[in-house]
Image 1 (cartoon, rainbow, N blue to C red):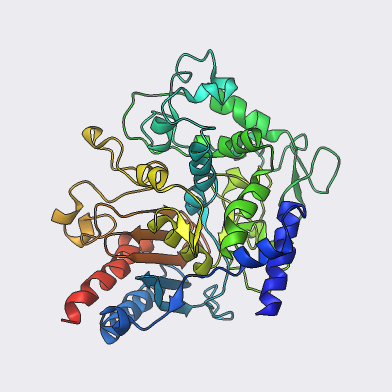
Image 2 (cartoon, one colour):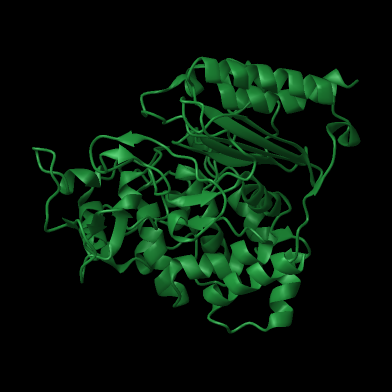
Length: 442
């Protein structure tokens, strides 16, 4: 235990610039609420769970939905299932291990900028219902964006363009990078590392902001957009006076003991293995390993709000448990209950929009659907929430059933064209097992 505390203390000092006392660091760094238990201890049928999950995942690997995966489920504050399956790649050399670190892709949205935004709402530094342009001054005077609210933006109700491929600004028609934006070596003004041998111009983010400024806005209806999540890190820095990374580490990850959660894991000397993602044929021209898969995040040096976070399943579970407990974890409060409840609430059901604020929610009328038509599974409660990630990740929490579900995979290996994880509905099928295990145990 002393060794763990020392590591946490050292990491915290880096994030907090030595401003916290050792006694406070030791107290909050050791907080760990998630104990381990068997499924039977929470009334679930262990044999049924293992048989069903093993079958679903084994078939997924056989069908090349992913080379490997891992699943963690916590119920009633106890980790009752944590299993690793398959390998990092289809050559079957490196087995998946429970402490492997994964590229979270869009799960970053609810693990990175969203907790910071909730804390800033608590502190009245952000208001959900006044124009976002009051904070993001670039949008003042833009008729299509100046009156959009943060509530509309976070609920994907603002009509913003879904996605912009900023890599198109960097790659020439012949496939080579534009040297005015990308260098092969670290140089002054080119310090944002996208990958070994790729350094992006420091101010490329300004170009991204200009393109976002000019992007079209459609009518206000449910339209998923990740554009503002590219903006949020800078906004958070403006409002807090701290770097986005340091703010998250100091206020959330390190106090919870979620020490693997963060950006650019290849630079941090973890002993954990990092699971690779796609063999990139456009930008990096190699296997993307230890660096963010998402190209937009990579052009920001791997630190973004739309993608870029990496973590283990256990560290993800800590954050989801905190959310499910309406802002508290291991005796510490991180976000007010009022704010957390507001963010996990469906915002615009009258517009057939299922979303909370940043969080995904079940389909409206989900409990009337079969598994193949539902999202994420028919049995989840309307109070449940979570998010999915492009690389094959998925997190979900259900306060009514006191259940946290973490699914990690690298379905984009060796190519993002591998889509059987969707066709076979694997993440939903596994989640459903833990609801039906209640019935199986009766």
